[in-house]
Amino acid sequence: MAKKKPNKQNKQRKQATNTNDKQPQQQSAAASQSKAAAIPKRTSDGLSFGDRAKNFINNPFVRFFGIFLLLMILFYRVFYVWMYEDYLENVFTTVNATIGSALINLFGYGTSTDGALIQGDFVMNVKRGCDAIEPIGLASSIILAYPTVFKRKLPGLLMGIGVLLLINLVRIVTLYMTGIHAPKFFEVMHLEVWQFIFIVLAVLYSILWIRWDGKKLTAERNRLT
Image 1 (cartoon, helix red, strand yellow):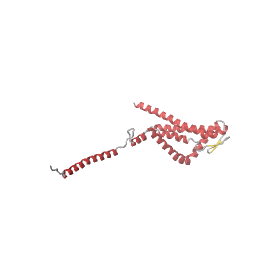
Image 2 (tube, helix red, strand yellow):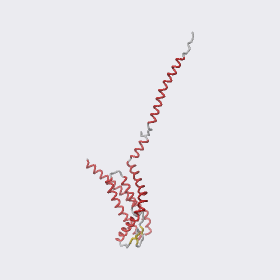
Image 3 (cartoon, helix red, strand yellow):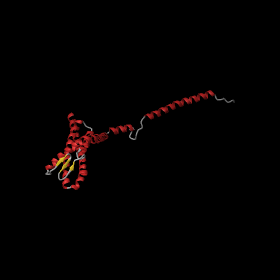
């Protein structure tokens, strides 16, 4: 019996058919890869890195802390170093020394002033750092960074400035008396005790103002409902 020779045309048709079958598969694989590349990778909690970064930035505490840091940097770089040092320091220190000397004299100490210098049985120079400007900058930055309407920030700022300036006068009086009666403790009171007290008082005032703002906000919402 004679064997039939394979038909070359049939072979070529089969190869063409196989090649045509592979092309759609390759195109489908390429499309799926490009689609996978277009989809952002998800983290373990189901959010992409961009979504997590957006949520982090929109977090109220993060925004408050970021604005607070920015305000403190502006305070030290713009106001405290440039404007205050060049234009306002002598005025503030002289006024503090004059009022402080008058208060000291109420307790029977005969003092006089020469610019920012308080003279008497003890000589004390009211310099930058003894003027309550840094605590005022700290409290003001907290209040301005807090997310609330400005109409409630303004009274908080004005009252905070007044309260901290009054406390600074108390510091001047107590430091002078410390220099008279316990001079060896003057530097400790000046550089450590009062500096710490002022920071605590500035933060405490800011917290009290935030609580007051919360009560005002609740009262306004209750009136609307």
